[in-house]
Picture (spheres, rainbow, N blue to C red):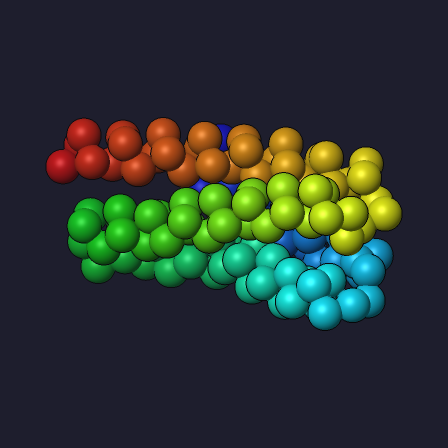
Amino acid sequence: MNKQELENRLIDFAASIITLTIKFEKNYAGNHLLGQITRSSTSPALNYGEAQSAESKKDFVHKMGICLKELRETFVCLKIIEKANLSSDLENLTKAKKEVNELISIFVSSIKTSKNNS
């Protein structure tokens, strides 16, 4: 997967989460997690763009690490949303969990490779 494909995948993932949040329960918990997951799921695409302009390998690894942290946060949010029944769209919730797991694996591998090449 090249840089542009990964960036597009991150953008598609962020958009899918935004679409998923439209079906959240409209209560305090639903609204809270809606905001949280919107921020954490859009952050990786934005930070990945920054990583492409990193000033050094150390800066690149740092920005990629931020992407990874935000992806992990999104995964935990998705699990909470599922357990608390805050979304009726179980099919897309399951797809989002699968995609975020794959993205986490990609970033873990990329960070590991970058560190080994330093």
